[in-house]
Length: 131
Image (cartoon, rainbow, N blue to C red; front, side):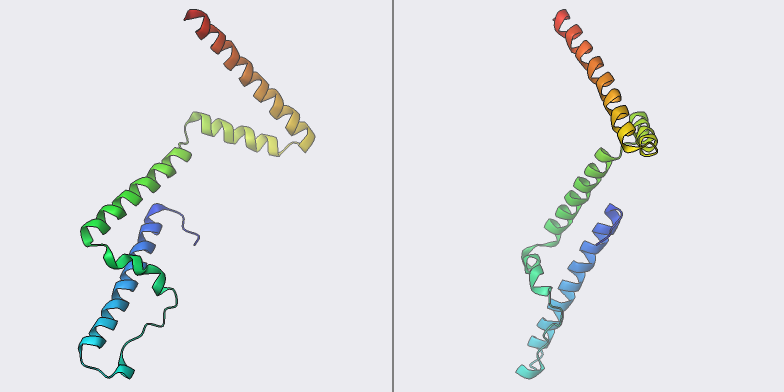
């Protein structure tokens, strides 16, 4: 669906829900006005039946569910895109590695990872010895 942010997702959910409810209302009105069977409103939207689960959701539940969905999406978005100094460092290193020939980039990547691993091992040994 090529949506870029949580607001777009929420907007799409609302739009689908509104379309579904409007189609149900049209069908209900045509059924209660005493129209002949041939004149009853039948939606031409092929995917409408896939939203039938919305029939049993009241407005309170719908609002809470929507808020929970927005909160969950925002949490995921912020977890993956912190953009702190380490994210920026990683992006800088990645960009520089992309400019190198593949073999040299892979060797350089291994050197960086090796250095980080050595530091983590050193820290783990220090913490073990102090305990």
